[in-house]
Image 1 (tube, one colour):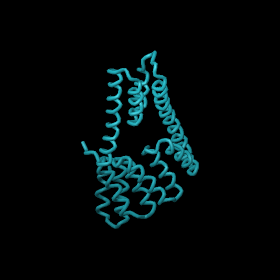
Image 2 (cartoon, rainbow, N blue to C red):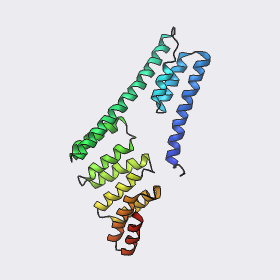
Image 3 (cartoon, one colour):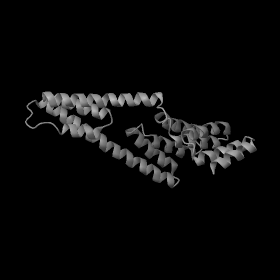
Image 4 (spheres, one colour):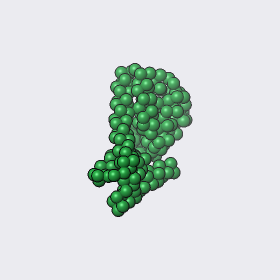
Length: 220
């Protein structure tokens, strides 16, 4: 099993911290019955990206709570958790619209949909990658690489992003850079046949016939 990158560790620690805080405040509510603790628990679960758990926690509020401000805080936190889930569904719809438009060759329109999705969910690596591919299909290579790099920044082990970054470099006739990207993809998945195959093509163009032949055999 591969080790996590430094960025992945930081994200995991942050998420786990919020999850632990949510658990802590929920337990305090169970012990003391203070609804403010329940509101804090729901909020921290939202911060951890666990809005469904936040809703379940808010539903534990006992009937007959006399503290109206605390009750309002719990309901507000719960409403926010529901909004999180609705927004993610909306982001998914925009993303799927973008994919449909991209498949029809309507690249500017697809980017508009991808941007709508990213405004809601800016940490979706697949949206950044496909936005990059739409940009590449319009020969906007610099912008394409920026978008794909955003995808890689979210997940450095995203082999498809490294592969398509290599393909963009091939379109730019930068085959040395392309080979480096294909190597990144292969390091993540040694059986990634497409990465081996396109690496072979770049190595051939760079003048290493026998090296390309060896790589081609590895791709089969």
